[in-house]
Length: 334
Image 1 (cartoon, helix red, strand yellow):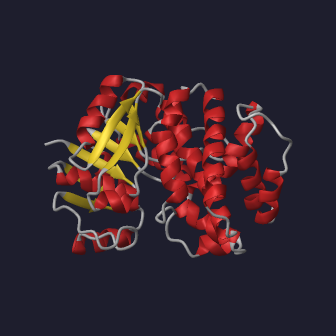
Image 2: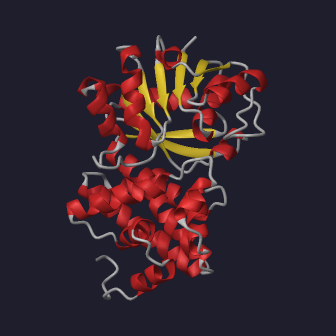
């Protein structure tokens, strides 16, 4: 029986672990919170991040990183992007030489401005590149956990690895497509959270469908611009990890990033909003990285720039919308 370790017991990590366990694999789920581990062992429910979902009997739980990594043929990495480097450094001594690595984190590291694939290679070494895959797409964890039909994409430099991960995760409700554009998959997955914050701000200000449609459409342009500047393929942004994930995150009520944006639009302060959340809204920190990366590469990303000013410079959200609307007029393809 294949032995799999899932690193990170948030809602998405728990859901992915449960998919694999229900398929009959021996899956160990590592959680940072030792009290959560104890409760999951007793109740088979992640009451902190995925309450109400009973987990498979094939799933085991541990707070010991070595137990979740040693002798595992596949490791699924679902830690928040800003702590991924720290977690990788901790697990590196226990990593098998031939294990496959699947990153399901969505973000760009602050300070270094590296994607998760670049963080993996920097920490674990270039030799792991041909064993890495990156999972992304429109997938609210709770809907997947409830076995509602979902389609995502997995990208890898090595197509054989992408195909193996595709087969590993696919079920009658969770369909996985392969892709070889790692950069595009990662940029799409990270940047959609920034646009979702903006979409939430628009909703919180009381704007309706017209404004949201404009943000999604022009947001996709920004994502594609940055992705192509990093070497991504344009077609990726019109697929599941681009337009698909963007639509879901900008419109769905389960979107944490959209929810943060709504509260900002209603006038609440960012610190107050985040202090009342037990899950991570990746878009807040990704906005900083995206803004800095766009500036570094000379890529025009006006929505991202306004979200940066709202989040990090205290700009009034309504003024940010006005400034977006009153920018110099351009052609649509400019």
